[in-house]
Length: 141
Image (spheres, rainbow, N blue to C red):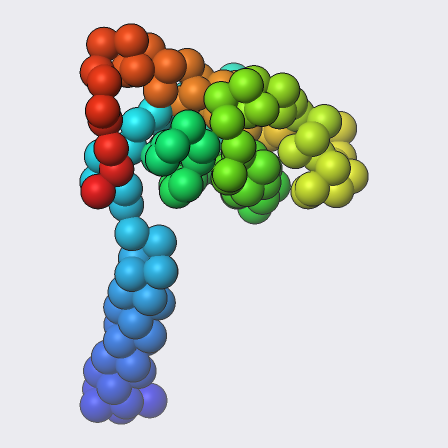
């Protein structure tokens, strides 16, 4: 392969990566001012982050992120999917079994992913409730 071929190949790969990042970023914009957030690192080293925006007492927007494996990603996305459109009282009832119902059967070595997603969701809800007592009228923009 010539130097020109290597440069062209590198350029094409760089553009593909840049396009993927751009599409991912614009399809999943960060929430500017979430009402409740939580970022927790589990014993396994995976970190999950959940942000919730409430409007009229229900979750209207969510954002999730994880540094973990694909199972962690599925679990945290299932957690925010379950929270969407729910009130705080309904979110309190969401547990790892509900998450596993959406994700499907998990290997025993990855059950902690569903537990971490539940813990992170409940911590984000707790953050929202704490803000409601000290910050009336918080809104997502």
